[in-house]
Amino acid sequence: MLPVQRQTRTQGRKRRSHDAHKPVHVASCPNCGSARLPHTACNQCGYVRPGLSLNLSKED
Figure 1: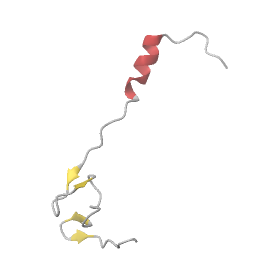
Figure 2: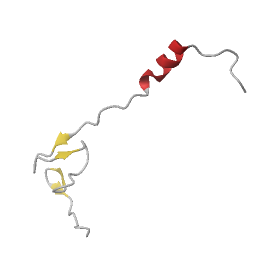
Figure 3: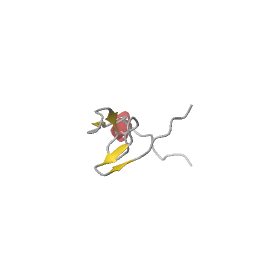
Figure 4: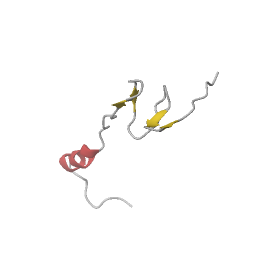
C-alpha cells in the first residue's frame, strides 16, 4: 500500500529526531579503576560487587 499523502520534510525530521545514537555510559571499576559498563562484571579483574568476583580465564 502507498501512503495517501506524502509526509512533509518537517514531520519526517520530527519522527527521526529520536533515532540518534545515545552515548554509552561507563563507570569506573572500584577495584582496579578501569572503565566498565554499569551493572556488569569488570573485563580486567572480574569484580562485580563486594563479596563477588568472577574468575576470568585467559583465552589464547
